[in-house]
Image 1: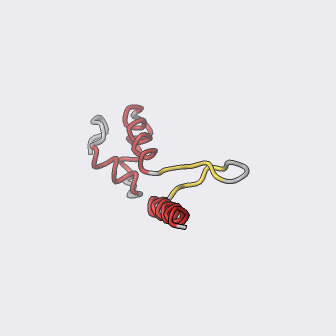
Image 2 (image 1 turned 60 degrees about the vertical axis):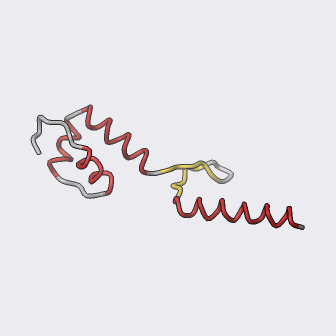
Image 3 (image 1 turned 180 degrees about the vertical axis):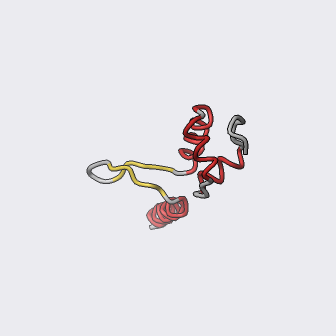
Length: 82
């Protein structure tokens, strides 16, 4: 990877996934364009939600969210059947 070229989408996805390359790290610190692309990719990769009495930000696990929705649908179907 050349320092003067922008990062490829594959480089950004690897960085978001946690595979940090020293050259990529250096490039992101220098290039504002790639830093913004990386920030957008990281924000889309993780869902956050405000929960609790203090409305703290919590990372939402997609599988947990799906399970909660399915459980809610099942409860509503049980109420309608009763």
